[in-house]
Length: 231
Image 1 (cartoon, rainbow, N blue to C red):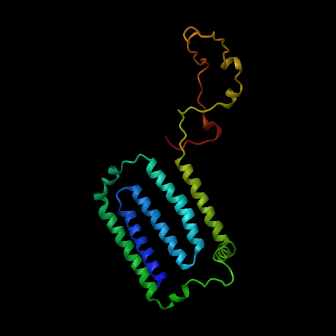
Image 2 (image 1 turned 45 degrees about the horizontal axis):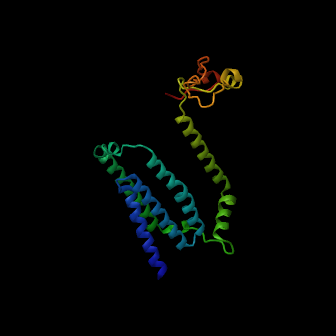
Image 3 (image 1 turned 60 degrees about the vertical axis):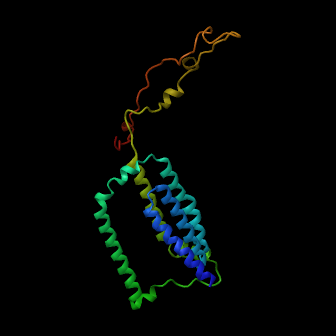
């Protein structure tokens, strides 16, 4: 009885917070509601007996992803009024896409409930004599290790592609010339002066300015085989 009440309580809070994620006007509030939704989903996992998934949900999604979203939203200077200005213009398109997704979801749920052969798609029972963590590791890292490695490779390629697409190499930017830096001598960069005791800076010759050397040259990375990805 208590388990059932807790299930309905956490499920109600989860659905409410999930609705607030997409309906809140302040993005910071949306991220906070998302964190609340993650916590309630973890509580549902605990009720179902999947404590490993609950801890992973809290540690990975709440402790890393959601907090990262929160910092990004708070640090970026985004004009949210300007972003919301086109809401009325794109409302028909968004409503159409939402209606199509809702119909597809209803068809999937209806087919799952009414199909007579849907029982064979149910999850296999957990092996006896082992913990949830051990059973999950057996499935992921033994039975489906190839698919797991393939998913990791796809994520790696996506990360590298995102870095390559967003990399900007501007020719006007100042670059370090390591050869010139290491070839400098002390006489070219440093002057030893003797200041008299109690004398002011003006009496000692004024503030010393950096020595004016040859103008820094721009390093052309294209000659070294690097490509310019945009301006």
